[in-house]
Image (cartoon, rainbow, N blue to C red; front, side):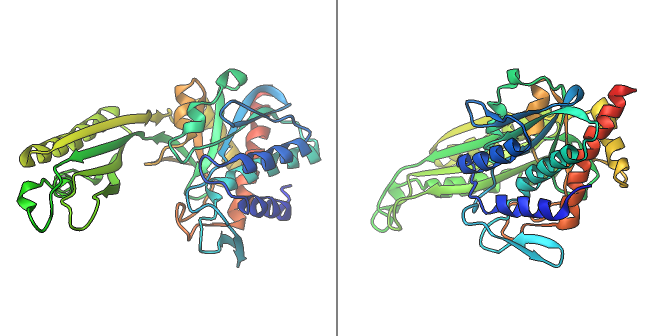
Amino acid sequence: MINRQRLIDTFTTLVRIDNPSGQEQQMAAAVCALLRELGLTPEQDAKGNVIARVPGAGEPLLLNAHLDSVAPAVGKQAVIDNGVIRSAGDTVLGADDLAGVAAIIEALRSLRETGAHHRAAEVVFTVEEESGLTGARQLDVSRLRARQGVALDLNGPVGGICIAAPAQAGITVTFIGRAAHAGVAPEEGISAIVVAAEAISHMPLGRIDHETTANIGTIQGGAARNIVPERVTLVGEARSRDEAKLQRQIAAMRQACEEAAARHGAQVEFVAKQSYGPQRIAPDAPIVQLCQAAVRRIGLEPRLVETGGGSDVNILNMRGIEAVNLSIAYEAIHSTNERIAIDDLERAAQLVRALLEVGVAEHSA
């Protein structure tokens, strides 16, 4: 009952709209227009998140996806090749998470066309998810009635239900040394780059254990090739599905920085800011049971998974909405090789429809 060609057209049309984090206005306008075509009345909160209420039976189910994509997300073009939609190669495709947006819209269209009895829903398309779940953190939840929800924003084959995701902390470290002429008096300087390099070499980074990771993502500093660099800034992160492990990882990174600075007589400013907490849902929670039933309804076998990536559901759970993230089978996200199979895009739309059909059956039981 999903219109496959219409779903493809919706997704590829959205792909062509520029949508870097913080620049989702055009995308939000296009999505609001699609929701109005369904007879809905979309709104935007102060942050720009799109909210729409779908009439139906029982308590509403929250349906979530995000409107932004990671850079490069300007000038995106979708190429269809042998049943796969992929990036043209110069940008990301934006399947993360426009595939989720398109699947939700097509499922609602399908239900409207067939007149099927279904559960009520609240659609929330957030902004600035990729830049630290900013849209979700500023979402005006007072506008929502839903206390259960799903996000369509997870890699892996359709049928995956994420029951655990990590907390994340952003880390910014600035090393302050002393500038000097690199050719005339290098011994009078303290190289902030040397201090930073030594600190990094002593940090536990990468895969720490099965639920903890850490990374230094950018390094900026120095003024010229003949000046001993006075200032260098590192930007990184730490994640863990265990809050105590996250704090230990941050402490280890801080210690490596402070000890390196002390050895060289430099100064260090270490700032760690937690963006969101961990998500953990019991395998027998009602929302998990609902998702399992919906997955089976479309002929697939559900799988409970844990992930190393955060999503809007981390925030939704903190805000009192029991939510899980669902796999929609996009691949190579955050790269110019990003792609999604058309069959998987269609399955994602089928899953959304099944969630609302199973949900109303449970409410009627």
